Amino acid sequence: MTNKYMYFIANWKMFGDLRTLNSLDKVIKFSKTNKKNKFKLIYCPPNILIRPLSKRLKNTNIEVGAQNCHESENFGPNTGYVNSKMLKNVGAKYIILGHSENRQDGESDKLINLKIKSAIKAGLKIIFCVGETLKEKKNKKTKKVLAKQIQKGLKSIKNKSDIIIAYEPVWSIGTGMIAKSEDLIKCVAFIKSKFSKKSPKILYGGSVNAKNIDKLKNVNNINGFLIGGASQNSKKFIDIIKKSISN
Ligand code: 13P
Image 1 (tube, helix red, strand yellow):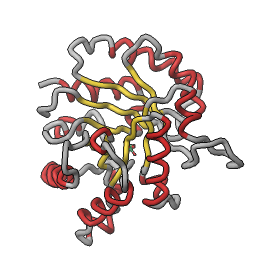
Image 2 (tube, rainbow, N blue to C red):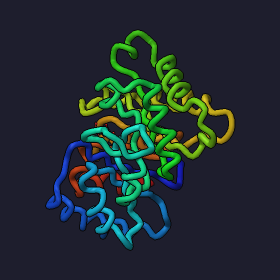
Image 3 (cartoon, rainbow, N blue to C red):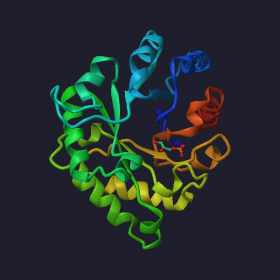
Image 4 (cartoon, rainbow, N blue to C red):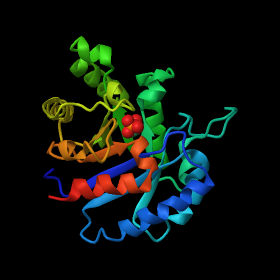
């Protein structure tokens, strides 16, 4: 990996409670070794943990993000939802949008686009997920799918280079399978080609762990990783980071 500044984003999905936060002491300690600013750490826990986690991470260089939001900028009659302003208010600085688990629940490109716009307005930084399903991959539709997700998801958004793109092939999430290096290089280059000016940062996500990180870190056009399962365990998460930043 030739990039100097690497992102490690923990997507906790529906994991964690107040007690779980104690396990982060190890990561906080480890983050203090980051004197040369080689990596950036961001935790995206469930909404209920954003506030307590932000408090706990005060005076550290670890940041907090959310995993999804309602598209409306205002308070409203939307039982069970929160909007991006509310997430910002409790300490989120980032937000994951367009995750395939939410796309599978019916989120359209258009809805994701509205969410991205409202989150930008609220002052959150966007982690925008794209990726093809196994069927699409087998039918050689990967590029077409990525192009559509990017075009529709980021429609009429200025400053696209501020958005972090997470390339997460759906077939790789939680399955233990990772993309082949040569495919990954091509997909990342393809995603970059969709941005005329400065390219956004591009991360890889899908079954990243301490065993496969040696392979993944050699893909030199990616800027870091979006990590699900393995980020729930502080030791495993630290191992991934250590291996990624070692030469
Ligand atoms: P896993 O690392 O558990 O495969 O999850 C990846 C993911 O969906 C991150 O957003």
